[in-house]
Amino acid sequence: MASITKRGKNSFRLMIELGYDGKGKRIRKTKTIRIEDESLLKKKKKLHDFLQAELYKFQAEVESGEYIAPEKMYFADFIEEWKEKKGKKRLGIKTLTERLNLIRNHIIPYFQDRKIDQINPMQIVTFYDVLSRDGARKDGKPGGLSPNTIYEIDKTLRNIFSTAKEWRVIKDNPMKEIERPPTQKTEMSFLDQDQASQLIIWLYENLSPTWRMIFLTALIGGLRRGEVVPLELTDIIWERNALSINKSVISVNGKATLKETKTGRSDELTMPEWYMDEIRDYVDNWEKERELINDQWKGGNHQYLFHNGVGERFHPQTITQKWWKIRKEHGFNIRLHDLRHTMVTLLIEEGVNMRIIQERARHSSSRVTNDIYGHVSQKAAQSAADKFERFSPENLSILSNGHQLVTNSKKP
Figure 1 (cartoon, rainbow, N blue to C red):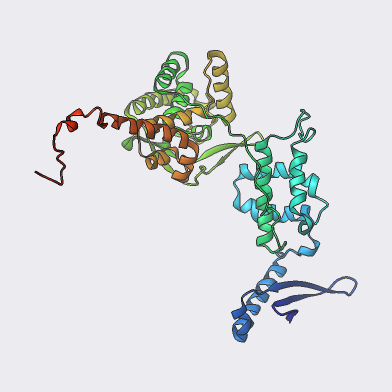
Figure 2: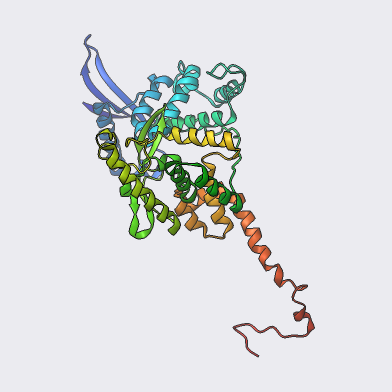
């Protein structure tokens, strides 16, 4: 049985009866809705239809187990609802894993015994202060959490509380009036043209074909490490001098997991002629080695372009560790991911259109590219503007000698 009862000027109580429990007591679920639209309140038929629609929706939520009773919802219980109905459906596996770790290690221990509708902004600000103090770390090291970790916790809480507001579990979102905590930006490093040239020469002189091509692909293609390791022979588009970037490998709690690319789409990445010549030679040797391996092949039906010698793809961390060893032994003062930054920076300094760079970097939008590389593009813009110094009145003394300026639109 379902019913609607008017409770006040603009509030109505929806009630669903679900029979009786083991003690003979009625099982009822109620929900109060408030209507702020004055015009709707004045139109009886529209109001009736609206309330009936809300009642049917409420009944479906209750009967399917989707309804959450706010007056009984502790924060820890809501986290479980959020994880199953929002987190697992909207977040990527790596992001979800990272946020659940923050929830388990820091958020739940602080808020678990509180009802979610009783958490206020002051409590959250105090929580951030606690996180910044000595003893907040879970690894036993001295000091508080880093500003970046606190910022990620803030992002997680904003998602949780905005969802609670969206689901009408809470009336007000306590995060709404809280200022976002500051972050510490990691300084981005990159190579200039001469340094990139020197690195490529070093790769040819010191590394095996497999490792040389891995790092050349990361540098010239601007690929993330997780986009390099799952590349297969079938991802080479010979007729268009391109690579198909259609999957990525991420590390989740140390385990390599195959997923869609970060943008969720497949992209063609055009490569220079010399790179395609190199990869063609590399594939020729790859196929010869595949025949020699024969029964020892462990790659199954996969044909990973870069593998461990018996067909198994590399773990992303293996690539990072190899580069870290190279850095340590030979003094290259850039991270593996900085090879990607180098690709983008060199294109910006060459004056390539930002939209083209965004597509090559496979960012979700040009805004993302501008946010990350804005300082580089400003430098490039100034360099471009400096090229017009030749047209200054001091350099064009001919204009000060009585000569008439002739344009394309005006003829003497």
